[in-house]
Image (cartoon, rainbow, N blue to C red; front, side):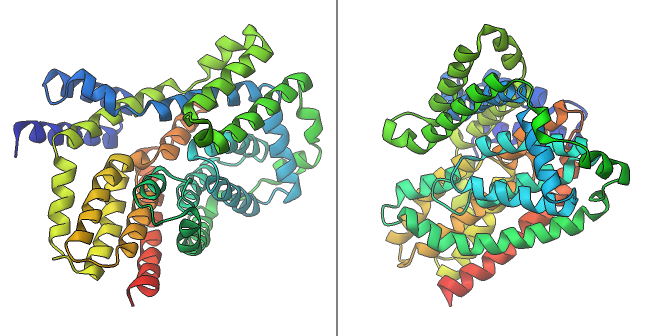
Length: 426
């Protein structure tokens, strides 16, 4: 194995060790690890920059600015009071409603946008009912990754697969993935209600206080609310049309953010920019560079090729291996470079004798998308929510996430395995 590959693996593993230990902030760890890759010559600066997904970073910054300005209107607190009163303050009902809203939203919007809109409301509800926000945040994270699997535009792996395989249409993703995603969503929701059952109880005084609150009273700036909602709806509409417009989602989000700042005046600009989760932005930047070290030195390609070689080209074991390998890999590294490596490998299998590639494509999609629930660093939604939660004084640790995330991931994979076998392999 080349020296560069050994160094890339060593730095990657060492970084994960420090992140899991949680003695040093994860952002500092990955940024220093990324710098070490450059200083040791494993990557050069131009190559590292090429692997940084600026579309993701721009999307994050733009939506964080819009949410920060909108929050000043009192909208999120008003929505939280309205929703809590609709279900009489019952935590299990709230958990269910917000989980399903998140999953449904992710079928049509990217996970960044959805969690950034839902999380502020979640914190408002938790404060009003004197509840821990963690069960709600975790369910929203999991449902974000599950719901995004249902359509071709819900998660980056599906977009990549849909672009590479011309025979798969938008409706193919819905008809093949939505049935199993509905089953997984219900199973995971049931598990989470059981897992967090001790934290889903409202104190009597909190419930009484909720009854006296009026959602309309929480709106503190109606003109600002109108401007914020106008820009927010315009931005979401832009997400639906961004491909036709020929621009990325980052362009839409940043344009919306600065249009809102233009409409509201400069007095909100510094406050909005200070509300951006910069530690999360830099963590993503460092993580992109760390994964780039594995990609550029061929570690991911060699690993995938070796593991797939173990099946001897047989359809059933190859299908299950892709499903589970994709999930485990995607819980540890960004699923975008992994899927980019797997697509040509699966296409090559078509030339090597596997006639029906369809179960392989759906296994890759399910594994790469659902695997993000396994560990805190497995998906964008996980890190964004963790960053906001930390700023709110309620940190989600690596270990705490893993205790719920790994069972959710394995439950999803078991259901996916049965589904793929019964639908495509019998």
